[in-house]
Structure formats: structure tokens, C-alpha cells
Image 1 (spheres, rainbow, N blue to C red):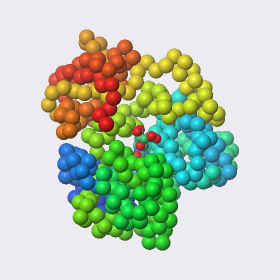
Image 2: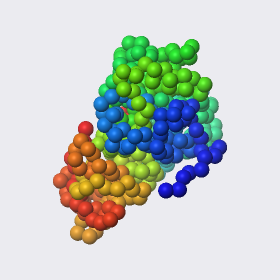
Image 3: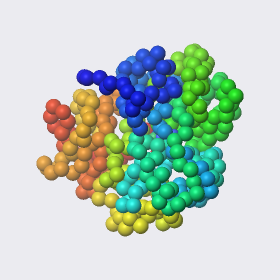
Length: 367
Ligand code: THG
């Protein structure tokens, strides 16, 4: 494979020196920033994540900060999830939609206070859309990307490692809540969240200068816990049904097609820019939807394009993420499947590199 040449446009993170010292073997590009994808191997990283604790450089989950009297109003314009009940200290997974109801991003919204929010974005240029809306509606709000870089601590021993560095109070953080903790004289927001289902935290590291000191403190404290550098793991996130924007869905998809209807309250999300469009499509219901899919046979090769799903030779959908699961001893996958063929148990043909396989629509993800 050819290499990707470094340049100023491809941003390093406050933790990149640590990631490279830990022997990162592969990167992807996410929000124009480096995101590690492999350390030892995807399978070895998976086993370690499910057994021990890992520190992840997810600085590429950039924050879009909203600050000012119209911050809450602007936040509600972006999403069909009703934010009226959301309190400071809470995080919400929020679909972001455009005026057609198409998905623009699927970030975590962090409510710091009534007039200060972070939108912890997936891989799309959400900052430009949010700035455009703020300017176009003449809102009294500042929109920018602050020097904030999430560092995730994930795995069954995450509580123990975090307690050693930040104190036992981290154990009291509830799921999708955050609290403030001191590190080297700075106050950092720490949430119980993260892009795995193995449990853990996300530290919103404010100020690049403390990136490597914090990275080193976590590794020093966790030696006997077998702490390692890790990264979002393809196998684990497919088993867990965690979606990847740009892979599993794009702006052509509504939240309902993505199975994110449970994060929408379109009737009461007054002010949401995509509300009318979503109310219209919700009446009919989606005609395709995200489904867990098992693919029979040997491990499928890594793939950078959708794999067609067929019934009696007719195209009925596509798989957009797939990997061999050592724990479930099958290929686990995420696909978008037409209504006529999305029932659990439906058997389909799938075109994988090197030939056709059988694929079965599952009733639920593997966790
Ligand atoms: N954490 C933070 N920012 C992020 C991500 C993250 N930005 C990019 C990307 N990940 C955004 N996408 C997701 C997708 C899934 C979840 C979070 C962000 C997630 N979902 C859980 C689920 O679907 O079961 C929980 C949702 C809930 O119950 O509210 O965690 O990971 N900071």
C-alpha cells in the first residue's frame, strides 16, 4: 500500500507522540486529523480491549462550541431530539439533520451550562453548517472549534485506572453524565461514555499542553493493569452496533433509516430545521433501515466500498461495515436493508471481494 504523506492539512493531535511511541501501525483520517486504527492487530487489540483497559487518542472527535444567549436555541435548531429536559452535566447522543431530514452528523452533545455547549462531532464539517445557521439567523452566539481533545479510557478496568489518576469520585459518574476533575491545575470534564460497549470514560482535554502529561500519567498509573494504547476497534464496534458516519450512513439517510428514531422527538423538537421534512417522512415510515447482519464463511477481507445484498438476484441493500468476530465465530456486519427484506432471519446473498456468500439479517446486535 502507498503511504499517506504528512502535511499541515492533516492535523496531528496532542497525543500523537504517545501514540507513535506505543507503536501505532495504522491511521485513518477523521475531521482532517489523525485517528489510530491498529496497534498490535485488530484482533489482538479487540481481545485486549475486552479484557483490560486502553487509552484512546480520539482527539479527532472535535468540539463545535456554542457560547452565548442563543446557544440552546441554536442547539435545538440542529437536532430532532428534544433538548428541553437536558441539564448541565448531561451528554446526549443527537442526530443532526439538514432541511431535508438528512443526517449531517451523529455527535454527542455536551451541555456545560445553559449558554455553553460542546458538540463532539463525527467525521463531517459540521462547524461550517452551524456557523452558517448562526450567521444566517443572526443568532447571539459564538461558534468555534476550541482546543479540546477527547482522550478515551475504555475497557473493564477503566474505573480502576481512572480512580488512580483522578480519585474515587470518578466511579460516581453516571452513564452519559460528566463532572469536573483537576489535573495539573486544570479543570477537565470527564464523562462516562465512549465508542465501545466495554465501559469507560472520555476526558475532554482542554489545552494541548497537558495532552502528553495526562497520557503519561495514565500509563504510569496502569502498568499492573496492563494498560495499552488502543483505538476504536472495528470488530467491537460492529458487535456493539455503534454506527460510523460516512460509512454506515450519509446525508442521504434519515435518522429513522439509521435506527436512530429512539433519539428523535420530532413532534416536540420545536425549532429543529429538519422538523417538517422528518414529520413528512415519518408518516410513511422508512423504506430501508440499518440492520445487524451475519455473513457466513471465512473471515471477510477488509473493504472500502459497500457490499451489495441480493435476494433472487435483485439488489435489496448493502453492507457498509464488516469484520470477523473471534467471540461469535462469524462475520459481523452492519447494513442498510430494504423493508421487503429486513425481517430477522431473512437470508440474502452478499457480494464480497472474491465471490458470493450467504448473509442473514439478525434480530439484534451481538451485545
Ligand atoms: N464520543 C464522543 N464524541 C464522538 C464519539 C464518541 N464523536 C464522534 C462519534 N463518536 C459520534 N458517534 C457516536 C455513536 C455512538 C455513540 C456515541 C457517539 C454512543 N451510542 C450509544 C448507543 O448507541 O448505544 C449510547 C447512546 C445513548 O444511550 O445515549 O455512545 O463516542 N465524545
